[in-house]
Length: 239
Image 1 (cartoon, rainbow, N blue to C red):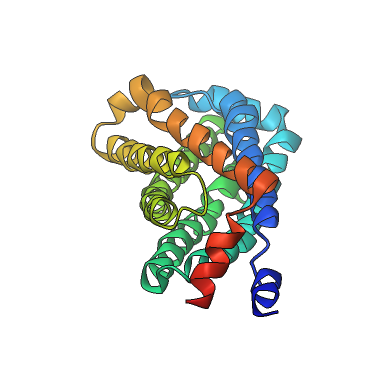
Image 2: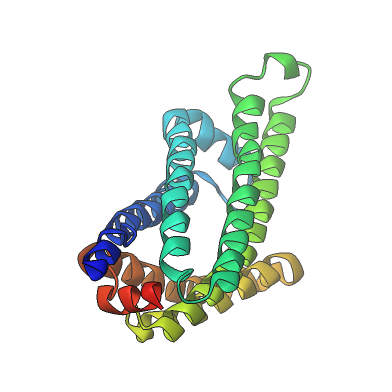
């Protein structure tokens, strides 16, 4: 009876997996479909023209970002519930690094909205020339990139902490934990290159972030399809 009670209380890990898949899909859509197509590196005028021409797509990117950021809440709640039975202090640190990354990213959404204010809702800036508004818009997007890179440093730390909990607990295949270590390191290096050596980011960015995509997708799919090792979780919860 006691074992059954414990099984009933196991967190909804499959819900976390589904939410994680939504986060990954939303992030890819915002990065590749929206920003990848509309933002022209180093060309403020072309970027402004793209945003004006595809305003609805740009707004959809903002809405998608808000939606997948909201999906992070159930994910971190489940992660904390799952791993606290193994190591509560480290699980709290897991939450803190995760929430710091999300708070930075949410606060950074203002810079994502700014280009629309400069380009679409420009009545208050009528005294400025079109090129000046385009420059302001591009500058806002550069601030967004910097804020997003900063959030990834905290998320990288979160990935490494999560990896240690996965490897130690055995609730999820340890190979996913080891993959998350490389993902976390890649996120942190990506942030450092963004601020310290931005000329390298274009050359190595894909190699730094691809392991993260593989590791996080593997984790999300595993949680969605299989959940966690319930027997091990019950054993830890009852100890």
